[in-house]
Length: 83
Image (cartoon, rainbow, N blue to C red):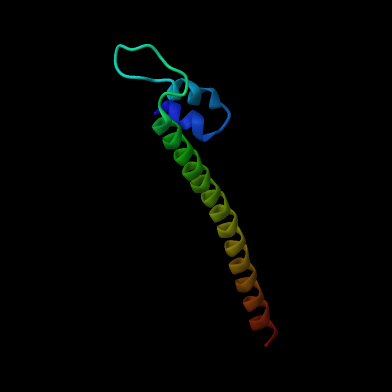
């Protein structure tokens, strides 16, 4: 699980190469043996980064919407006092 998190941050991408070199049980590693692991990590990194980016954008938009709501309420109160 920790390997997946470190790969999602793209800071510790060196985990990917040993994962691709994994072979069967009790066999020595072979370079680029498991392409399935590569495709798994590739899909995981893309999905994880997309999810993180969506969360970041959602927080920003939520902040803008909250501020717009506050401004709308403030303007409504000012208009009521002028009448």
